[in-house]
View 1 (tube, one colour):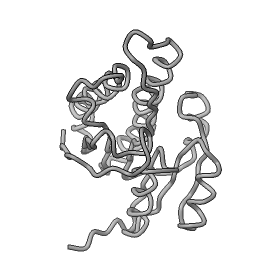
View 2 (cartoon, rainbow, N blue to C red; view 1 turned 45 degrees about the vertical axis):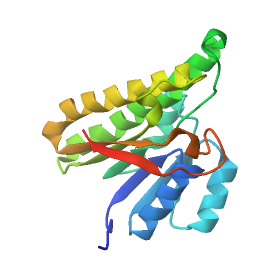
View 3 (cartoon, rainbow, N blue to C red; view 1 turned 60 degrees about the horizontal axis):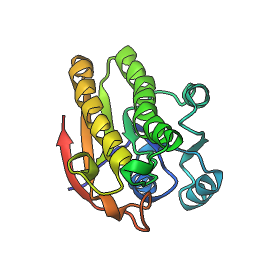
Length: 200
């Protein structure tokens, strides 16, 4: 079956590496006009060389004001893939406030913020759309040295369910993708395979 996103506008966060980069390339191959968001300019440069149609946006999503400014002119978005993530693994007794805050700022707060920006546009246009939040199997089971990471992904799961409740009346579909934890470059060296996809 051929999948076409022709005429659709997509926005992907965490687009420089791994799952995010692969998602950008797949959407572009399917005809979408893709805005790729990441904080590393070198990753964006190489992505544009690989796929010249991509519109690059370099911003640190943990900065609320910078994100608002960077995304205010991206235009109408039909599909958001919230993929940006941060993982700094520590034993529970060694978790620091700085690493706790950074993990929640990227994995939860930034996902909420970017989804708000996109969802407001979808609501205003009344045409519906889709938001996909990339979670992890770490939201479903406890893992040694993953206390904060597991907590952020559990929070993202519940955020997605709440978004479903509140955005459903505006024809905005929400999906939660959970991947196998150790297959992503965030934590190791290779892109993962998706373990499950849930329509919330």
